[in-house]
Amino acid sequence: MDAPLLEARDVHKSYWMGEKEIHVLRGASFCLRKGEMASLVGPSGVGKSTFLHVIGTLDPPTRGQVLFEGNDASAMSEQELAAFRNRAVGFVFQFHYLLPEFTALENAAMPGLINRLSKQAAEAQAREMLEIVGLAHRMDHRPGELSGGEQQRVALARALVLKPRLLLADEPTGNLDEATGEGIHQLLVELNQKLGIGAIVVTHNPRLAERMPRRLRLHEGLVVDA
Ligand SMILES: Nc1ncnc2c1ncn2[C@@H]1O[C@H](COP(=O)(O)OP(=O)(O)O)[C@@H](O)[C@H]1O
Ligand SMILES: [Mg+2]
Image 1: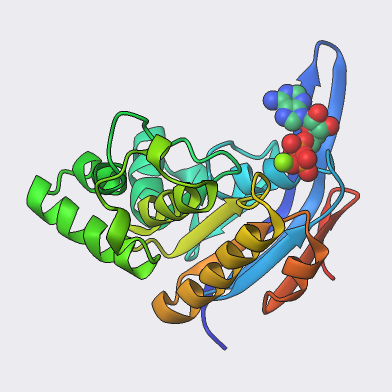
Image 2: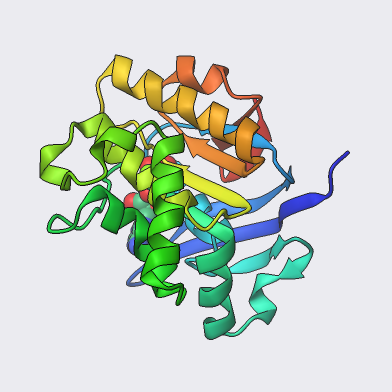
């Protein structure tokens, strides 16, 4: 068995609307091993995005622990967390959040530049990743000159360009038609196999969720194997 990549231990997360507590995560415990890939399903509003934010250390749990490779995220400073996130975790969302005035290559090179790689090195890595996601022929296109599926591939290349150990994808195919969404899911599975990156992919599509090696469901504030 591979070592744990990510662990959640009795994680609770509440939001407060004035006096009213919205208790979203209610003691979720779960472990993802290095290189393991899982889908996460559950009805809208159940807390899937909340869970990804908490395990991705974008948002602290109200109670409980998140451990990344055995290190407790709550013991890290805000600065350490940000540095860790930049290096170790890639995020992809339903909307691509690409910068419209930059080319695919420049968008994918952005994390490298933020991590102080030279422009040359950042673009070399971006080129490599864009080739892997099948966009060698679209490097100089701006987001507005790409299809929805291609935009999402650029977002994926950007998320993976620094070779993170974990990819968190929140309904990455939610805005795409069925066939295009299928292509992105296929690509996610290939990337997981090729690069050995652990991944959690939230999806509304049960057919796509079925195809992932492991299937998780968020139910009444807990994460369970489906
Ligand atoms: N920042 C927030 N403030 C207050 N309530 C929130 C916030 N984010 C999410 N919620 C509530 O928490 C619940 C879970 O939301 P979310 O994690 O987005 O669900 P899902 O991704 O499964 O659709 C919902 O009831 C939502 O309204
Ligand atoms: Mg959501």
